[in-house]
Length: 510
Image (cartoon, rainbow, N blue to C red; front, side, top):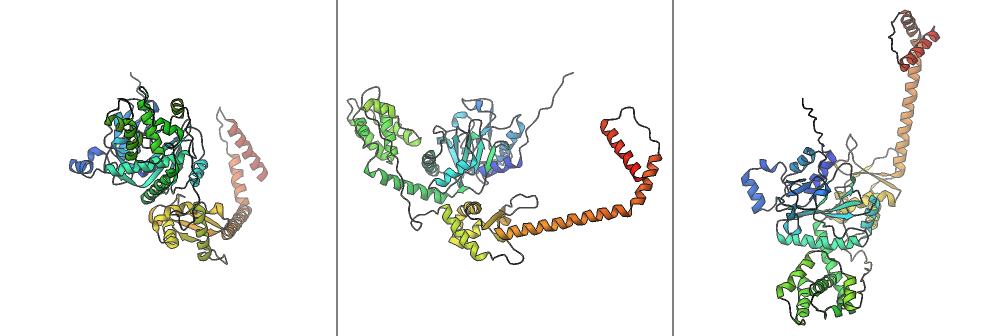
């Protein structure tokens, strides 16, 4: 007879389901239920006319990501499908593509040119870091975003930044989101040792219960703020490089005069990278490259000059300092600029410590001093944003400031409103309870006194009960002692110990 053993399946947890649903979102990206259950008419309208639905790819191990695998991966077109693959496999899903592609039936379709919807950016760090180190680094950046998810990996961590709304549909929107992501990656790389070769849109670790280090769905990057920040970065870069950049250095000038056969394509790529790092547009870089091409003994075809530049501007390449030095005899000097601090009335964004100060002043006015019974202040981040600035869209920044309030000031204590199970509330009932620290300490002290009084009362009642019913229990004990009960052949040590205690109690009561 065959010995058939049942296969153990992994069951997704509520946390995993919540994170997947948050990353994908609702109404666009993937279908809610299985794609095969969706009527064809609706599917065609969503897929081809509205361009709101696509597909993602899941994998069951890192070893299946390297090449075009026919096994070890699956295609999901719905949230239910992602969770289904995670449960129906032996070890569960380990990697996936959090962003949605037009089609994912082949491995090579997981590329930037096939993106249909962008909402999540993934950054990979190949060294162990704590949650506080990553969050502190983002606090030091002049950008109003913060990771919403941090996952541990065997070699380091992965952290994720999410837009408040997804960029999807048109090619222009996807291209614009790529530009914002590329600029953010440069800013993050100045403070964190991220992997430059990692595509922020491609494969990422799947959120599993055991590798989730941090998750806060309120940390989203407002799309309008992201566009304003990117526009400000472009203006700043153009001003920075107006007085000189890589192309105007000695190495850059000599490189523009170099065109020997065997290295022309490499020189062209380095010129394109210099132009990109100098803040020039693709059209301006093409003009420089075409001018360089006219100086060659045998000029290249126009398409052979333009195509590498498009590749450079579409990706995130780094300068090859060693190659440039070997060709020109000069090593380019790395350019790093320090931004001067602006006053608050000029800046579009507020620093966290400024928001904390505003919130403190507001609480001082609306939260009365504790006299008699203390009542906490119930408030939400949207209400605070509307009260302080008249802009509800600043609620994300207010949320971060509320979380840091107790670190900056010991006068107030902020706690999230929770349900009867102790989990933070979501939706309309969500918000915060704000206490004055001294009032909260008084409340805790009063609660301890009530508890102590209750315990004293219970001890007193138990003692008087034993005295009143002493004779009754003594009589019943004597009767029980006279009963002849047979003892089993095998008696455990614990049974003998309890029996001995029982006999000692009977003798004492007599």
